[in-house]
Amino acid sequence: MAVSIIRQVHGLRQARSLPRRVSLVSLVIAMTFIDTNHLNVKEPRAGWKGRFFHSQNMTFAYYGVAAGAWIHEHSHPNDEVWNVIDGELEIKIAAETQVAGPGCAVVVPPDTAHSVKALTDVRAIVVDYPRRYSIGGTEL
Image (cartoon, rainbow, N blue to C red; front, top):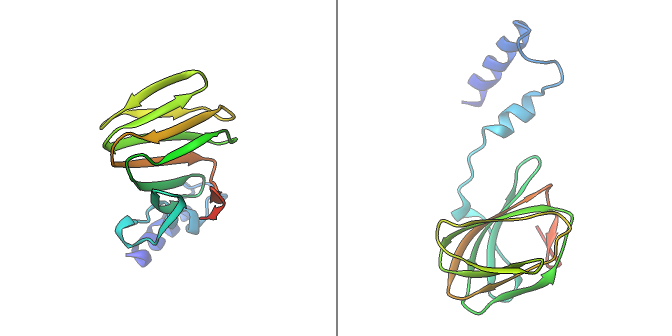
Protein backbone atom coordinates (compact mmCIF):
# COMPACT_ATOMS: atom_id res chain seq x y z
CA MET A 1 0.00 0.00 0.00
CA ALA A 2 2.73 2.51 0.98
CA VAL A 3 4.64 1.74 -2.23
CA SER A 4 1.45 2.41 -4.20
CA ILE A 5 0.97 5.77 -2.44
CA ILE A 6 4.60 6.74 -3.04
CA ARG A 7 4.29 5.85 -6.73
CA GLN A 8 1.10 7.93 -6.98
CA VAL A 9 2.78 10.89 -5.26
CA HIS A 10 5.87 10.55 -7.45
CA GLY A 11 3.62 10.52 -10.53
CA LEU A 12 1.82 13.66 -9.31
CA ARG A 13 5.14 15.40 -8.70
CA GLN A 14 6.31 14.53 -12.20
CA ALA A 15 3.07 15.97 -13.59
CA ARG A 16 3.84 19.13 -11.52
CA SER A 17 0.36 19.10 -9.96
CA LEU A 18 1.81 18.72 -6.46
CA PRO A 19 3.72 21.65 -4.95
CA ARG A 20 7.44 21.05 -4.37
CA ARG A 21 7.11 21.83 -0.63
CA VAL A 22 4.76 18.88 0.06
CA SER A 23 6.82 15.93 1.25
CA LEU A 24 6.10 12.24 0.82
CA VAL A 25 6.21 11.87 4.59
CA SER A 26 3.44 14.41 5.22
CA LEU A 27 1.19 12.77 2.63
CA VAL A 28 1.75 9.29 4.02
CA ILE A 29 1.16 10.51 7.59
CA ALA A 30 -2.09 12.17 6.52
CA MET A 31 -3.37 8.74 5.48
CA THR A 32 -2.47 6.94 8.72
CA PHE A 33 -5.10 4.85 10.48
CA ILE A 34 -4.99 4.66 14.28
CA ASP A 35 -6.76 2.01 16.35
CA THR A 36 -7.07 3.79 19.69
CA ASN A 37 -7.81 0.46 21.40
CA HIS A 38 -4.12 -0.40 21.00
CA LEU A 39 -2.74 2.80 22.55
CA ASN A 40 -1.39 2.83 26.11
CA VAL A 41 -3.74 4.25 28.74
CA LYS A 42 -2.46 7.24 30.72
CA GLU A 43 -4.14 8.86 33.72
CA PRO A 44 -3.17 12.56 33.84
CA ARG A 45 -5.67 13.14 36.69
CA ALA A 46 -7.41 10.74 39.04
CA GLY A 47 -10.38 9.22 37.22
CA TRP A 48 -9.31 10.53 33.77
CA LYS A 49 -7.99 7.58 31.76
CA GLY A 50 -7.03 8.50 28.22
CA ARG A 51 -5.46 7.16 25.07
CA PHE A 52 -3.56 9.91 23.27
CA PHE A 53 -2.18 10.45 19.80
CA HIS A 54 -1.12 13.36 17.60
CA SER A 55 -1.63 14.50 14.06
CA GLN A 56 0.86 16.97 12.65
CA ASN A 57 -0.89 19.89 14.38
CA MET A 58 -3.38 18.48 16.91
CA THR A 59 -3.55 16.27 19.98
CA PHE A 60 -6.40 13.77 20.37
CA ALA A 61 -7.51 12.24 23.67
CA TYR A 62 -10.01 9.40 23.94
CA TYR A 63 -11.11 9.58 27.58
CA GLY A 64 -12.97 7.26 29.90
CA VAL A 65 -13.86 9.36 32.94
CA ALA A 66 -15.17 8.12 36.30
CA ALA A 67 -18.24 9.81 37.77
CA GLY A 68 -17.14 12.56 40.16
CA ALA A 69 -13.72 13.07 38.55
CA TRP A 70 -12.92 16.70 37.87
CA ILE A 71 -10.39 19.09 36.37
CA HIS A 72 -9.69 22.30 38.27
CA GLU A 73 -10.19 25.69 36.65
CA HIS A 74 -7.27 26.42 34.34
CA SER A 75 -6.42 27.87 30.95
CA HIS A 76 -3.89 27.15 28.21
CA PRO A 77 -3.01 28.63 24.81
CA ASN A 78 -4.66 25.77 22.90
CA ASP A 79 -8.07 25.69 21.25
CA GLU A 80 -9.83 22.71 22.84
CA VAL A 81 -12.91 20.87 21.62
CA TRP A 82 -14.78 18.35 23.79
CA ASN A 83 -17.09 15.83 22.14
CA VAL A 84 -19.18 13.81 24.61
CA ILE A 85 -19.91 10.27 23.44
CA ASP A 86 -21.59 8.83 26.58
CA GLY A 87 -22.50 10.29 29.97
CA GLU A 88 -22.66 13.88 31.21
CA LEU A 89 -20.00 16.49 31.88
CA GLU A 90 -20.52 19.76 33.70
CA ILE A 91 -18.30 22.23 31.87
CA LYS A 92 -17.62 25.78 33.01
CA ILE A 93 -16.13 28.21 30.47
CA ALA A 94 -15.40 31.68 31.83
CA ALA A 95 -18.58 32.47 33.86
CA GLU A 96 -20.94 30.07 32.02
CA THR A 97 -21.66 26.51 33.21
CA GLN A 98 -23.60 23.93 31.20
CA VAL A 99 -24.14 20.18 31.16
CA ALA A 100 -22.94 18.43 28.01
CA GLY A 101 -24.35 15.00 27.15
CA PRO A 102 -24.03 12.53 24.27
CA GLY A 103 -23.65 14.28 20.94
CA CYS A 104 -22.67 17.63 22.47
CA ALA A 105 -19.54 19.43 21.39
CA VAL A 106 -18.00 22.17 23.51
CA VAL A 107 -15.41 24.61 22.18
CA VAL A 108 -13.02 26.17 24.69
CA PRO A 109 -11.22 29.18 23.18
CA PRO A 110 -7.48 29.66 23.83
CA ASP A 111 -6.46 31.33 27.10
CA THR A 112 -9.99 30.96 28.56
CA ALA A 113 -10.53 29.70 32.10
CA HIS A 114 -12.46 26.44 32.18
CA SER A 115 -13.16 23.47 34.45
CA VAL A 116 -14.83 20.09 33.96
CA LYS A 117 -16.62 17.63 36.25
CA ALA A 118 -18.01 14.21 35.30
CA LEU A 119 -21.59 13.94 36.59
CA THR A 120 -21.72 10.29 35.43
CA ASP A 121 -19.22 7.88 33.92
CA VAL A 122 -18.23 9.51 30.63
CA ARG A 123 -16.62 8.70 27.31
CA ALA A 124 -15.38 11.77 25.45
CA ILE A 125 -12.96 12.77 22.72
CA VAL A 126 -10.95 15.94 23.29
CA VAL A 127 -8.97 17.65 20.53
CA ASP A 128 -6.36 20.36 21.16
CA TYR A 129 -4.81 22.70 18.60
CA PRO A 130 -1.93 23.18 18.43
CA ARG A 131 -0.44 19.93 19.73
CA ARG A 132 0.05 19.44 23.45
CA TYR A 133 3.07 17.59 24.73
CA SER A 134 1.77 17.07 28.26
CA ILE A 135 -1.52 17.19 30.13
CA GLY A 136 -1.67 17.49 33.90
CA GLY A 137 2.10 16.92 34.07
CA THR A 138 1.78 13.63 32.16
CA GLU A 139 3.95 13.45 29.04
CA LEU A 140 1.95 12.45 25.99
